Image 1 (cartoon, rainbow, N blue to C red):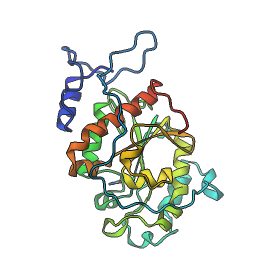
Image 2 (image 1 turned 60 degrees about the horizontal axis):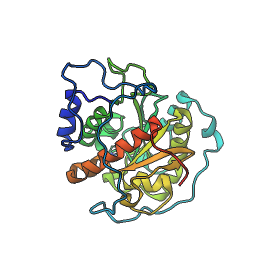
Image 3 (image 1 turned 135 degrees about the vertical axis):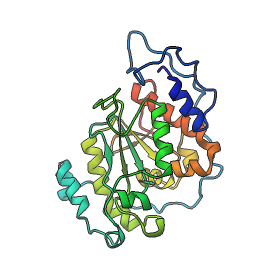
Length: 275
Ligand code: URA
């Protein structure tokens, strides 16, 4: 991957300094070149991915609930029907407090699928995931690896350059409290169907809650980072939640390592074996 000056500037902005090769002198119109088997483009220097012990990610475990099989009517829905099902969902009490559901956004065949926890206040108001400050940081980090959440002049309609973003929960928990196991149980078929429809090459699970829910574990993020897991057969890489990174900028470098690992999995440079 070649690094534009803007990408380097964004990396600096998100706290990743001095990791990349000197950017090309001439401004480039294209954000990132797709993999070229014959002549691979230079990639940024990457430190080996360490499996690190967490320092400050909140320790409280997410309760483990039994896995849900995408079954029943949800398992056969197409995009419009799934969207409508989510919009009208009354499967748990969150439907009483939400302004609207937050379905998900991005390219419906994106190679990358990002999964967060649940809508916050702004997402509940706007109906789109990650629109607040954490969303801005996420957008900057995605841009730095040549990705976006919508059509761009460079990569319009290119599923390799866009992401699909969804949350474990489609409704905002009141006062942004932690999702309850019952709420996850009711909502998970929607996410499973989204994964089935997108068929991403990689899932990036962001934050303790999404990670522990998807992987059905109580292991902390620090112990799950640096290797490739699976969700519904799809390779899954674990990283910190952007909101956590805003509070703990020192861990942005680790999140950058996670993005590099994810990119390597997508490019086939990293084996994505079963754990
Ligand atoms: N945090 C999340 O996990 N998801 C959102 O959509 C917004 C904030």
